[in-house]
Length: 332
Length: 265
Image 1 (cartoon, each protein chain N blue to C red):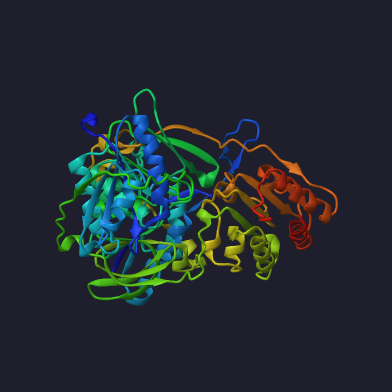
Image 2 (image 1 turned 90 degrees about the vertical axis):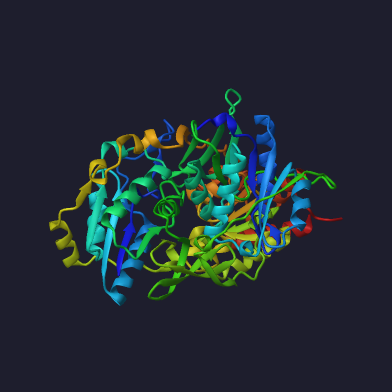
């Protein structure tokens, strides 16, 4: 494999229902930095049906080139069809780096594309850098449930592929009117590229919980003692204009739905203020929230690990402390 | 119906601790377990066998001690277990692991469904299942949270999404990866345990699989670990004491001072 033939950073522009996923802005923000460090350009691959309206948006978010595949067979994501389109495009245009969001779609697509290309693939990266010496991609990710960080490289194979945890990278700035190059991809899909047939798409989450975008998150854990505790958590969240999060313990206990879960197996968040109430601070939880600008912890147990990462800690009963905070806020 | 389940023995990451002085992982005394999502994969296979009859084969790659985990799978009700084990398999990344396991699956042969766990708790990559499918040229559905219907030539499953699920029909043979919402894994039976410990576990190496040693393990892996480190701990902050009212007032004061309250007026 002549690795010098591979040039450019690519981002998979994952869209659902005609809208870009929020992680795409983050990938474009990060992709721009990597492209500059590697001295190359930023491209994106857009797949779907009737997605022309997203092309200009991608230019404005920093894409130099948009590779577009627009076809009825691509209306909804399926593993076979998207793998074929992505792998064919990458084999033809030879990008050195491909980034995808570590969503349920990205984590399904990336391994199959990587396999077809013989590429190295690193999952769920939280940090990406270009080695200033030889321009290789340094891909850092948590392992062992967040107990260990590993930096992975792909020395001899191209492309270097990575999925990136949503909510970790900084979003691209929008430049209205920015222009770029449009490349329409040839699509040659056969029956063998349509083996997964989607019979139905069911949305079960009616409440909008976009923890990755929230400025303030108030999370409750096992210390709440029961589902009723989330009423108080909700009140505090409302006071601060934030959203409700939770630890895995509260989700496993059935007190709140999984889409509220913050942590290694839930959502990674980076709000301005994170208030952890009755959460002891298992390493898996800390891995998902320790990059918040300001962490406030309320817990009965003064030895709870959550206090090790907190900017402000209050030892006490959350059922007393939270009403006091709401009152103090309203007086301020 | 012949079903193959891909399983991995993993350290229980809930029990992994950091040496506070050296800042390294303490692996001693950490129990090895059947990867949780793989237990859901095995349960799915066993319950299909309960309904439709057939056989369940478990395959794993790892060191010799992974036989303990495979015996657990037998004790839960699997009919057969194979361990892919060889010094040359060590250090394999997901790409090479998938290639090696795919060769083992071909050697078992004649399957209708391959189940794997969505991901293993030591690496959390979720890559090996779909890459095995790719290597075998089979269709795949990942994040399977329910099996709705098994037909003669296809299966209808629910694929978990962030905001709901999709109902997908996929032809047999295929690869499905299981999430924990799929089922509750059964317990081992006493009879099963006795039986499992009397059994020999089949072990295959690169010669049995007819793979060249250069195509195995760390050497053949596109990705390499460049360095690993323990995440630096964030410095401990300020504890706010006094009554709940005092602490709350001090907190709001501090946030106000930092301009972190959005309050208007």
